Length: 136
Image (cartoon, rainbow, N blue to C red; front, side, top):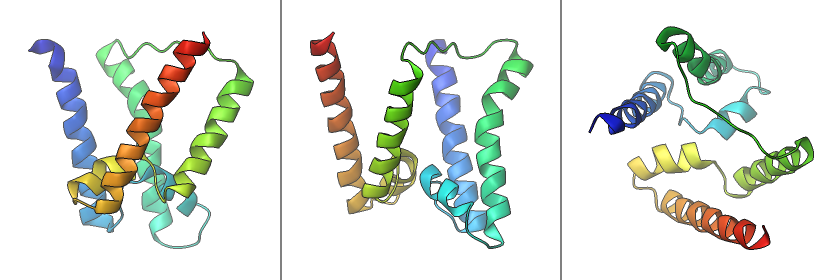
Protein backbone atom coordinates (compact mmCIF):
# COMPACT_ATOMS: atom_id res chain seq x y z
CA UNK A 1 0.00 0.00 0.00
CA UNK A 2 2.82 2.40 0.82
CA UNK A 3 4.08 2.20 -2.76
CA UNK A 4 0.84 3.78 -3.98
CA UNK A 5 0.80 6.72 -1.57
CA UNK A 6 2.96 9.07 -3.69
CA UNK A 7 0.74 8.44 -6.74
CA UNK A 8 -2.39 8.94 -4.64
CA UNK A 9 -0.98 12.16 -3.20
CA UNK A 10 -0.02 13.41 -6.65
CA UNK A 11 -3.46 12.62 -8.02
CA UNK A 12 -5.12 14.43 -5.12
CA UNK A 13 -2.92 17.49 -5.66
CA UNK A 14 -3.68 17.53 -9.40
CA UNK A 15 -7.41 17.31 -8.70
CA UNK A 16 -7.21 19.97 -5.99
CA UNK A 17 -5.26 22.36 -8.21
CA UNK A 18 -7.63 21.83 -11.16
CA UNK A 19 -10.69 22.35 -8.94
CA UNK A 20 -9.14 25.44 -7.32
CA UNK A 21 -8.33 27.01 -10.69
CA UNK A 22 -11.89 26.35 -11.87
CA UNK A 23 -13.55 27.64 -8.70
CA UNK A 24 -11.38 30.72 -8.17
CA UNK A 25 -10.58 31.70 -11.74
CA UNK A 26 -13.31 30.07 -13.82
CA UNK A 27 -10.67 28.38 -16.00
CA UNK A 28 -10.25 24.75 -17.00
CA UNK A 29 -6.78 23.47 -16.12
CA UNK A 30 -5.94 22.61 -19.70
CA UNK A 31 -2.24 23.38 -19.93
CA UNK A 32 -2.19 24.01 -23.69
CA UNK A 33 -5.03 26.52 -23.34
CA UNK A 34 -3.32 28.25 -20.42
CA UNK A 35 -0.05 28.51 -22.34
CA UNK A 36 -1.86 29.84 -25.42
CA UNK A 37 -3.65 32.39 -23.24
CA UNK A 38 -0.39 33.90 -22.02
CA UNK A 39 -0.11 35.78 -25.31
CA UNK A 40 -3.53 37.40 -24.94
CA UNK A 41 -4.20 40.54 -22.92
CA UNK A 42 -6.43 40.25 -19.88
CA UNK A 43 -6.61 40.02 -16.13
CA UNK A 44 -6.56 36.21 -16.07
CA UNK A 45 -3.13 36.07 -17.66
CA UNK A 46 -1.42 36.66 -14.30
CA UNK A 47 -3.32 33.81 -12.60
CA UNK A 48 -2.66 31.51 -15.56
CA UNK A 49 1.06 32.36 -15.41
CA UNK A 50 1.11 31.65 -11.66
CA UNK A 51 -0.55 28.27 -12.22
CA UNK A 52 1.97 27.36 -14.96
CA UNK A 53 4.88 28.57 -12.84
CA UNK A 54 3.69 26.25 -10.07
CA UNK A 55 3.76 23.35 -12.52
CA UNK A 56 7.36 24.13 -13.47
CA UNK A 57 8.65 24.87 -9.95
CA UNK A 58 6.75 22.09 -8.16
CA UNK A 59 9.12 19.18 -8.92
CA UNK A 60 12.38 21.02 -8.02
CA UNK A 61 10.74 22.39 -4.87
CA UNK A 62 9.61 18.89 -3.88
CA UNK A 63 13.11 17.55 -4.55
CA UNK A 64 14.65 20.30 -2.41
CA UNK A 65 12.24 19.72 0.49
CA UNK A 66 12.10 15.91 0.37
CA UNK A 67 15.77 15.36 -0.43
CA UNK A 68 14.91 13.16 -3.40
CA UNK A 69 12.85 13.45 -6.52
CA UNK A 70 11.82 11.69 -9.66
CA UNK A 71 14.60 10.30 -11.83
CA UNK A 72 14.37 11.07 -15.51
CA UNK A 73 16.38 9.62 -18.33
CA UNK A 74 15.93 11.10 -21.79
CA UNK A 75 17.39 8.89 -24.48
CA UNK A 76 16.14 10.75 -27.55
CA UNK A 77 18.18 13.43 -29.23
CA UNK A 78 17.20 17.07 -29.60
CA UNK A 79 15.76 16.71 -33.16
CA UNK A 80 13.44 13.88 -32.04
CA UNK A 81 12.37 15.83 -28.96
CA UNK A 82 11.68 18.94 -31.08
CA UNK A 83 9.62 16.92 -33.56
CA UNK A 84 7.72 15.27 -30.71
CA UNK A 85 6.98 18.69 -29.19
CA UNK A 86 5.70 20.02 -32.50
CA UNK A 87 3.47 16.97 -32.97
CA UNK A 88 2.08 17.30 -29.46
CA UNK A 89 1.40 21.00 -30.02
CA UNK A 90 -0.32 20.27 -33.32
CA UNK A 91 -2.36 17.50 -31.70
CA UNK A 92 -3.54 19.71 -28.85
CA UNK A 93 -4.76 22.31 -31.32
CA UNK A 94 -6.38 19.67 -33.52
CA UNK A 95 -8.07 18.06 -30.51
CA UNK A 96 -9.10 21.39 -28.96
CA UNK A 97 -7.15 20.65 -25.82
CA UNK A 98 -4.60 18.42 -24.17
CA UNK A 99 -4.58 15.48 -21.82
CA UNK A 100 -4.86 17.71 -18.76
CA UNK A 101 -7.89 19.61 -20.03
CA UNK A 102 -9.70 16.62 -21.49
CA UNK A 103 -8.37 13.89 -19.21
CA UNK A 104 -8.51 15.61 -15.83
CA UNK A 105 -11.19 18.25 -16.19
CA UNK A 106 -13.26 17.02 -19.13
CA UNK A 107 -13.71 13.48 -17.83
CA UNK A 108 -14.62 14.82 -14.39
CA UNK A 109 -17.41 16.83 -16.07
CA UNK A 110 -18.45 13.78 -18.16
CA UNK A 111 -17.89 15.77 -21.35
CA UNK A 112 -18.61 13.53 -24.37
CA UNK A 113 -15.98 15.39 -26.43
CA UNK A 114 -13.39 14.77 -23.71
CA UNK A 115 -14.27 11.08 -23.46
CA UNK A 116 -13.67 10.68 -27.20
CA UNK A 117 -10.46 12.75 -27.01
CA UNK A 118 -9.04 10.65 -24.16
CA UNK A 119 -9.87 7.43 -26.00
CA UNK A 120 -8.03 8.79 -29.05
CA UNK A 121 -5.05 9.85 -26.86
CA UNK A 122 -4.84 6.37 -25.34
CA UNK A 123 -5.22 4.54 -28.65
CA UNK A 124 -2.60 6.74 -30.30
CA UNK A 125 -0.20 6.23 -27.41
CA UNK A 126 -0.62 2.45 -27.54
CA UNK A 127 -0.16 2.42 -31.31
CA UNK A 128 2.97 4.57 -31.03
CA UNK A 129 4.52 2.27 -28.43
CA UNK A 130 3.73 -0.77 -30.56
CA UNK A 131 5.26 0.82 -33.67
CA UNK A 132 8.39 1.98 -31.82
CA UNK A 133 8.90 -1.50 -30.35
CA UNK A 134 8.54 -3.12 -33.77
CA UNK A 135 10.98 -0.62 -35.31
CA UNK A 136 13.64 -1.18 -32.63
